[in-house]
Length: 229
Picture (cartoon, rainbow, N blue to C red):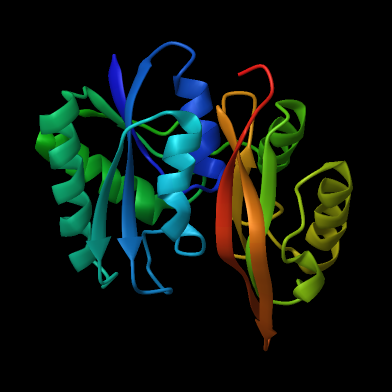
């Protein structure tokens, strides 16, 4: 089956892609670029670098801009999925939804309308299992956004590793945060993995943090050829 991945460059859409590519052909990545940081549907931090991610993975990319207005942004999502169906003849769409009924139900509705299948391979997956999967599969993921106490500036730019998992487990117990960031506590960006043809090298970045909200602003990225690829 030929599939299109709803892709943000973050951990969830990437893990969903990895899971589906074992048995299906990944025809393209599909990204919606929202100008609204408070978008209900779309990942915003780092989305401007999806072109680099697509090149690093060696996959085609279809993009669509949106103002990110609630419900109206769904029409933009429908339009870009329709383009992907027409251009790449895909049979289905894959999302990285884990716990958001809002996102999953609306993607399903669009897929039903367009006559393609909808896959949510991470749906209701244990969040610690998600994080452990990142470490086990040797995927390099960094934190590029935080929102809410007790996450502070020190978390920006941090890589998801065994120590990270240990620390978020402690915060889950004490503050009831979602350990995989499903409550919007943090945003991520995948910079390398075993399926990357190039790794994303962050050349220049700056931390911005104020009132429990922070962004790891990546100013410059380069593609770095991997040895043996």
